[in-house]
Amino acid sequence: MGLGWTIAILLGASVLQLSAAGTTPDWEKTITTLPRGNFPNPRPLVATYNFGWNDLVAATGEIRLDKSGDRLQLQGTGGTIGVVRALWKFDTHHRSLADATTLRPISMHQVDDVRGKTATTDITFSHDSLERIRTDTKSNKIPKPKTFSFDGGIFDMHSALLYLRSQPLREGDVYRLVVYPATTAYLTTLTVAGRETTTVGAGTYPAIKIDVRLNKIGKKRALEPHKKFRRASVWVSDDHYRLLLRVEASIFVGKVFTELQSVRFPDAAER
Image (cartoon, rainbow, N blue to C red; front, side):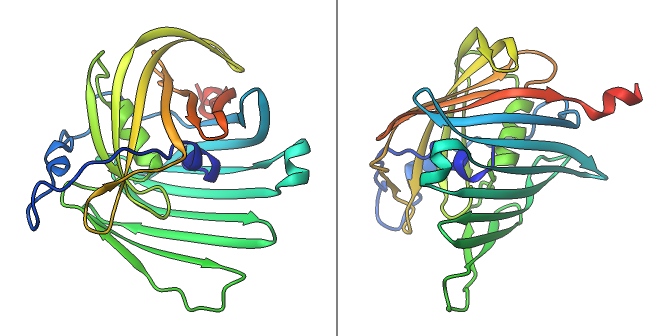
């Protein structure tokens, strides 16, 4: 949810064409325009996750959610472990802010340390546009801000999950959002597949399964394929918490996953 490797496992694609030169692409007409739903915002929490592929745990991470004034904040840290770390050392630090009322993104800051290089990404959002600055320690170039706009509104990973969990999530419901995780915009199609019981490291939960399709938005608004993606699903708990339980995707290296290992609520001691 917003961390570097979470973003990576959710990349996917299919191909759609513009309806006609100079006109609005058909896919833009399908974007969900509903306001945030009535489901309450998440409680402050601290959660740990495992990340990996097939049956191998390759990385671990910690997520902290809290509220400050009218803002919801997500902070995450993580990195590769064990044998995988010996082959590919990767660490990430992530912070994102969203409006607690509208659930729209405000800003995102991410620092990735990999292969002796540190890459820093900063994004500032308005309702229908963003500005991104990306730097790395191996480049001598002065970074140029990159902008992206979309009249239907733009989400990052954190705010997209907040918006999704706020909705009724009835079986068969479909939500289509424009999501900008870090460097590229995607048309994200989320379909509520149904209810089932799911067991993860943190325990057994009643769960809502949501199928995910992601289509890269090209420079001319055409949707482009991603050669490494096949399909993905997300499970959130079907209770008054709506926790992110598991993400599972099929890509060119096999099955990759994110799975909840533990969760605690710091405000419980205050009750």
